[in-house]
Structure formats: C-alpha cells, structure tokens
Length: 381
Image (cartoon, rainbow, N blue to C red):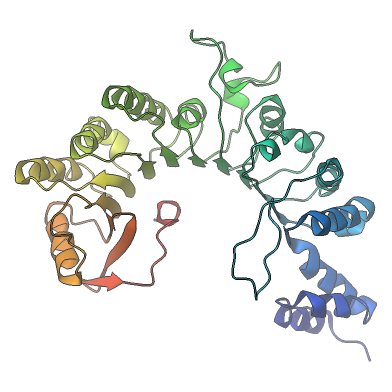
C-alpha cells in the first residue's frame, strides 16, 4: 500500500537529523527516495580532505543530487571526533581537492547559501574555483583572497544580499581610480551594477566597506578599523561614515571593532554619525563604543545618543572602569542610566576584557541574560 506524499514528507522531516536514516530511506521506495534525497542534499557541511573530495565527486557526476543542494559549507579543517580533546586541525588541500570542489560548484546550479571557511595562507588564494559557476547566491561567506577571480564571480551575483569578506585589497594607484578599478572588476562591469542587492556587509577591512557600501542598499555593516594610530583612525572613520552616507538605504546597524578602544575616539565617531539627523534616524544597533568613566564625557556621550530616536541595542566597553561594573546590580544601574537619555534602548551589551554581559528590558524590568548570544545582534535588531 502506497503512502500519501504528505505522509512520506512528514516521516522524512522527523528523521532529518539522522543522515544515515535518510540514506536508508532513499532505498526504501521511489516514494521515499524523492523527499529523502531532497532532505539529504539540501544542506551540506564538508569537512576533511578525503571526505570533501568524495562528496564533491558525487555532486559533479550526479546532476540530480547536485541540483538539490541549496546550502553548502566547506571547511578547511579535518572533522573532530567526539572523543577528541583537541580542536579540529587544518589540512593542506591538494590539487585534486580544489579541482573536485570546482567541479562540484559548477554543478550545484540551485545553490543559494555558500560558506567557504579557510584560514591558511595558501588556501585563501583559490577563488578560481568559483569560475564558471551559474548559481545565484543570497548569502556568501568568503575567506578567499580578494582578486580578479573573486571580483569576477561577485560581479555575476545580482541577487546576493548578505556578504562576508575576509580579505580586501586596495587599488595599487594612490590616485582616485576609474569606475570599477577600485574593486578590480572585469571590463564592462561598472560599480553601479556590482552587487545591486547587497544589504548586509561584514568585512575585516574597513576599505572593503568604503568601496562596497556606496550606491548599494547596504543597511547593516560590521567591520574593523585597519589603523591603530589616532590620526589615521580619524581619517579612516571619516571615509567609512562618508561611504555609509552614500548607501541607497538608511543605516540600521553598525558594528565597528577596534584594536584599542578609547573614549575620545568613540566620541569622535558619535559626533560624525550624528552630525546629520536624517543619516542616523533609523539606526537600531551601534557598537562597540567606550562607555566614558568621566562624568563630563559621559554626558557628552548621552547627548549624542539622544540624537538616535530608533536605537534599540548598544554595545559599550567598560574595561577602563575600576572597580569593574560586572555585577548584575551595577549593570542594571548603568542600563537604567543609559535609558534615561535614550529610552528606545532595550538591549545593552557590556564588554569587560572581551567578556560580554547582556542586559535586556523585559516588561519594563532590566534583566541579565546569561544565556544570550551576542555575535549576531547587529543582524537581527
């Protein structure tokens, strides 16, 4: 007796966490094969040298399976076993590895989410594996080195909305480069046609934000200051703010990491951000800023926050405070003080020596959330 299609799909859904069970279901009957294969290949996480090559060969030689892949993550690490007391170790990919990955990517024509996690020096200069790909991504995490191969691939991604870049290279010339040269785009591709739907950008070099934000609908940005000297950082932040002002959408989230946080520089950043009320009128998330200890500077800090009527979450560094305000009562008091001047704030992340403490307003009460995950707040709020 045949099962109804809905029943097969429901059974597959309940066992989708077990890949071995899904493989077994593929052999039960044609009825189960279709939904089981769809669940089996929809999301793939490839770890380890040999395992990655094996799966890539299956995808490159089995078009039916390759077309089912929607999300793919590739890790440049060996898979750790449960009984190991050490973290996964990186491996040196061979030419066969990169060739197999290239062939698989060319076959996964319906891919929408791609994550490439590689941290080794030689491993990151392999963006050529993206040559010839026809899929249209929505999300792309890329650890590859910026260059003409990566730029050419991105120039074909007209639907990409969420991008992470681990590397970016400035143009070789010090003069203002012609249209497209700053991004090393292929001939005939203008910057205005490059990544037209990009809305979320995470990059480890602020130069990438300066190059990619203008003329695109980027509303959420996470990046790092490249320089450490105050004068150079001031020039850098002016370039970043200038680029943000040229986005096609108003800024909603800005997460700026710094190698050395200071109160004076945080006030300089706030001054630039709030100089135009229209520019910061939709800002929901802002971090990381030094929370001044000095009362006069703190009042200046609050004055800037009062110009952000939509601010929901702020991340502040309190590492300079002595004694450290890490007790729940102290964190609650500082949160209430912040809300006196900016009542729209409902979430505050306090950073003390890289340890994060999250306070939330729930039903009018300020509570400490010890289980909170703060890494993606800039994406969500």
